[in-house]
Image (cartoon, rainbow, N blue to C red; front, side, top):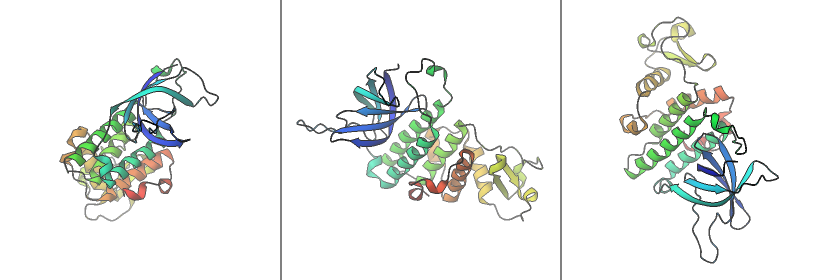
Length: 264
């Protein structure tokens, strides 16, 4: 069994008076549930809790398979990274909660008793994107440069690329013409790419939301996460379209996300 883990706290549940059960996103992009006895802090010495949403922690686990094999127990732990500004900005905190609600559905559960688990690195990109998202979310709030739609676009677009479901954007999927020549294009969820208005039978119009999304995806594909200040997303419809596309690919109902209304 792997007994030393590092991960982000993406959810927590109070258990009894001073204990917590935390859901952690590990560096391999998978999740585990861990029992932290005394994790809420308090007691005679009034210790503060070091297990907050978005904190990066390192934990030592007990090498014991519980009756419920999906729940592990931590013997000790410490924080590796914490945010200080996100929780002071309610919109930034809502956005972080949205990230974690989405992750809870995308990430698969890890089995720390599996001796072959190190060979599966297919989901590492999920952790990489999320850790970057939290770091630069904290930075943007600290620099008084937090723009919720810009941060959301960077997260959704990077996640889609890492998951391998990015829409094809070189040409119209039907007529094969370069999409640059069209003012109006649509993102066709079922085909995984863009279609021009000529092929979809719609009338040409001024630059539409599909074309704006296409330009942004192509323009920011090679950007580093640190370049978020170079992009200004003012139309939340772009993120709604991108989120709907992701939901379609994984058969999620967008209305089932409790935190969705706080970010769109």
